Picture 1 (tube, rainbow, N blue to C red):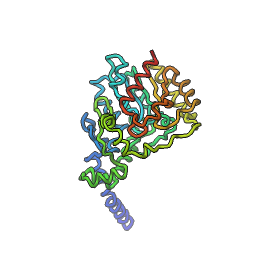
Picture 2: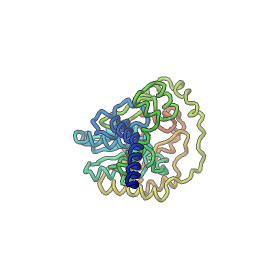
Picture 3: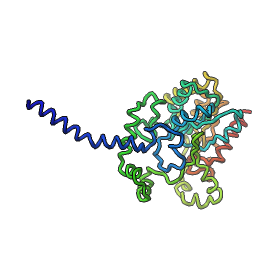
Picture 4: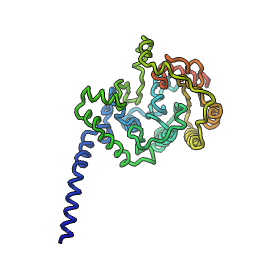
Length: 343
């Protein structure tokens, strides 16, 4: 009898201890702070969302594709990290058939394995991929798989390494951040300033287009072009950036080579017309000659457009928002140069 009473007491205390967690979980589901619980309705992930880590951009890309593809019938896809966002659909469309329907299948801190999994997802779901534009900055060849970070964890429908439980655990834990929690319930300027200072929030409104999933920074272009001295004067760290030395270490190791071969295999076996761009970065030296040769050997010399050593662009401060992300009109010029080369 005493043993049963002890068990009941233990169960009762356990349930009591779990009540706050259960209540917080119910709140997470009801509030859906990162827009990853309730079904996507085409407007819930709206342009102008200012919380940098809300929502997960990998999730946005997949759910937006599911929602709009039945009416848009996408067949042309831009792959890459945030750098690829400024390679706009309009700039690429000039070089594609009039019937092409373009979608940005992009993600923050994209990896080679992420591109491979996204391409495989499209093929496995019978979504025709006729054209692909792949933006592969050098960091992508060495970027780790950030499966434990909420902003970068892949969608569970795309990555075989991620379960739905794992995905939501990361987002639930992020909601437990007291400042994010309070901001989502009672947004104030004071909380916003705190989140901006901590790097958890951006005060630059998104220019995201729901249908193309394009999230470019083109809204800043006119500001920069009209008064570049003021814009860059507020970014002296960029003006004073020290050039990277040569020679550079190799970036494409055996694992990266294997993933590139898998990507090339999917592209070629499904007769997908594709272009690879290695973009320049401000005052960064070019991709090593060995890495360049490996990339061309795997992806095809006629497909690879390596601008990492473009002498004009790597020294032109006014071509960048922040030294990495290239101004939209410059990205358009790079696309034009790719297709001029092909012809």
